[in-house]
Length: 298
Ligand SMILES: C[S@@+](CC[C@H](N)C(=O)[O-])C[C@H]1O[C@@H](n2cnc3c(N)ncnc32)[C@H](O)[C@@H]1O
Image (tube, rainbow, N blue to C red; front, top):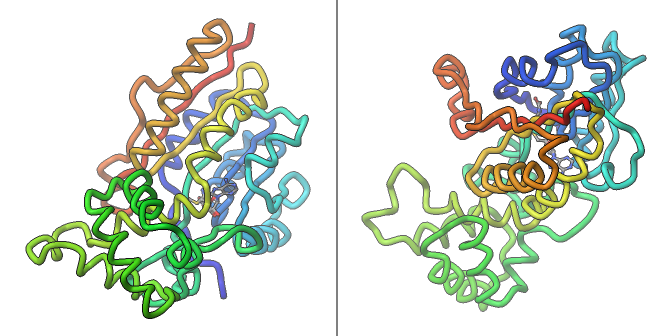
């Protein structure tokens, strides 16, 4: 299927924060639809740029976009998890950006199983070439493990009740679709809470997606490597979309700064959030937070 357009959040803020001087080499760890990637190129301040994405569709689309652009000499994309890339490269960069999590393409593609708005296979893997999907987790994990996943990664207060309903359901039939899970979440909620601002399935879907893609572990283990890969004077910007992610970024930046105060400076004491104008244009950006850290020139 064609790659769905992605609105690039906080893009002006990313340019202002990361390209403070003419930055020669930029790493975009989350290519997605290429929004930030091409904005950095078009700024005229980047001489070389590498994009990464673990999603095969984003990678293929990115390859075509680059090949058909006027930037094919200085831009490239690699199909990889950013943790694997950071672990295996000797290259250093003048600016690094990660716009974390999944893209609009994921949420808007029923066949990827990320959204309860559509019926589709319960998969939720960003990299469809490896690992296990959400339905394997739901069909095979112990009730207590499922409850922990819903609670830890979704902060779902009804985690135990939903896990118990999941196990009850699968006695008769294995999970295969998003609508089956949505229905279980819906009926697990008391009637007076079923039609609130947040749909009863929101937190469970978030939890499974984070779990299946190991998003938090990858982020936590990658941040020290990201900083290691910065040239002196280089900046790292991380955009997070929920409190679990933002907490990791905040704490990891503080911990690394505490251990290396002479080399590092936290640029954003408070995270940068979207302007009212951006919120109007793209309500999905409402939870975005950008934090920036700099490796100092000694
Ligand atoms: C929010 S989107 C990025 C959108 C992009 N900044 C734009 O403007 O179009 C996140 C993208 O990063 C990818 N991604 C998430 N975690 C990743 C990881 N650990 N390694 C590589 N790619 C990842 C996802 O597949 C998704 O395409």
